[in-house]
Length: 265
Image 1 (cartoon, rainbow, N blue to C red):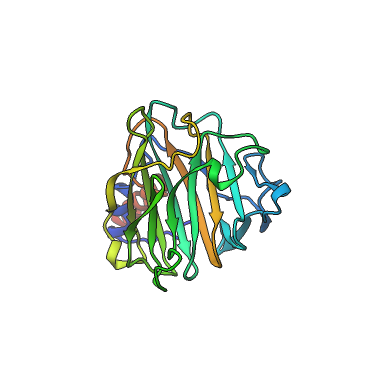
Image 2: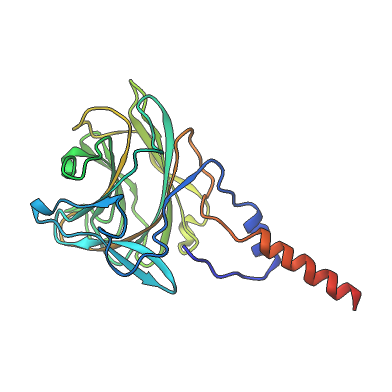
């Protein structure tokens, strides 16, 4: 994500409070071209044998992001075999999401990595579902999978806003659960980071336990597009820091130099 610098005291103080902590960037889509994402990086794939459409890269104001949407069952998978939430460990996934309208797109995690295996939604462990559930009405909402059932997370999220989403994962034996927190600079209801839904949401147990090496983004019924950006992982702990980097060092250095020059006049 590329951000526009705002030269105000408030902006500087806000930037100082934002740190990447122990997060590691998985993907921010910068440097990609618009169009199909498969082929631009070996991490991304989709199951062509099932006739599923590939995710695409979109661009707005110089910022690139993943576009997920369209026909039912289209999905895109990101494999990561080096930095992951290991079997028996805890960790955090962070990503940003933007709904273009009433949507039905989900994100999931899976221990499966091969491009030709584990590409079906049932092979993943669905977590956050972004958009209105079938039969739930027209409001844009956030849902979660709690084992094999839907659990509402937030009923007042809106289209046309970017949401920061933290998924705190417990991948240990006897637990296999997660919590969800969100925050948005575009939605006053969630200007402050807020836990949505209950604690201890259970993975849907359709696949064997293991290292969580894949992220899935899957379209459901009659979905408008959802954009995803800034995928991060903390493979060691539950982390509620915003990992999206802020241009603080150079900005503060420039401001200090400008202040010094003004004092010498």
